[in-house]
Image (cartoon, rainbow, N blue to C red):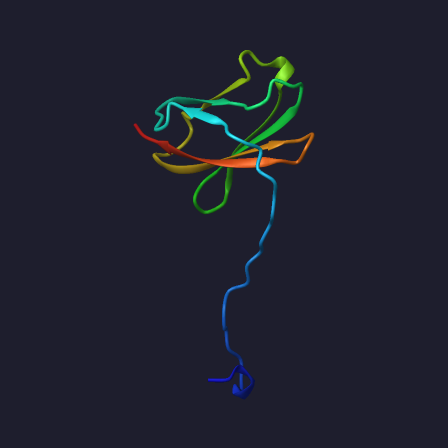
Length: 110
């Protein structure tokens, strides 16, 4: 009942890391679910740089891209999904100027 009374080696819990960040705001990901490609619509019309990362559910980075909004048409970035297996992925979008970020879930289908 008291952790101080334990003798020996025990795993009481797994360590966790908490990272607090300020939200980037709303981004649109469409189509979602997607088959061959998906489009990410960024929230800002300002000339900012963005980092876009795609992770699988094991937290392995599958795809990474850096873009600047001044080089984009309609603030949209298209991702080619041909190399991805069917499943669920997490898209992380970070504004490199402000450090704000947001996450979206993406479902890849066939």
